[in-house]
Each structure stands twice: as C-alpha cells, then as structure tokens.
Length: 84
Image (cartoon, rainbow, N blue to C red):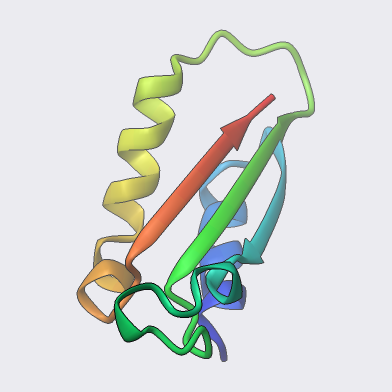
C-alpha cells in the first residue's frame, strides 16, 4: 500500500466527523535539493467537517502529527493540513 492510502486510512479511522481527502504533492517539489519527485514525501490532507464541531485547529494538527509519526520516520518530509 502506498503512503497516501495508508495516511488516508489512518486519518479516516481517527477523524470520523470529517470528510477526508489526502493527496500527494511531491511532484511539485521536483528539483528541490536534487529531489526527483517520485517518492510520496509531500502530502496534503484536507478535512471538511460533516457536522458543526468545536475543535481547535492546533489540537487537530497535533493529533495528526502524532498519528503520522511513523510515516515521518519512514520518509514523509512535508505535511499540509487544511481544515474547513
């Protein structure tokens, strides 16, 4: 299973009250520090609230970073999180 799919499964499992979209943005960074853009190192996560929730963005970011700590150890370089 590729990194994008693994991350999507992790986020969906832990954020039931959100619609989740996960995409690989690595190709955009091709050429930066000799990066070839072929590895899934730059990921965008978009969370859309299904219901009106009173959640703090910082807490969501912290939880996601904790959930993905193993991915960072295995080569995930950058994570962009959008919450609406």
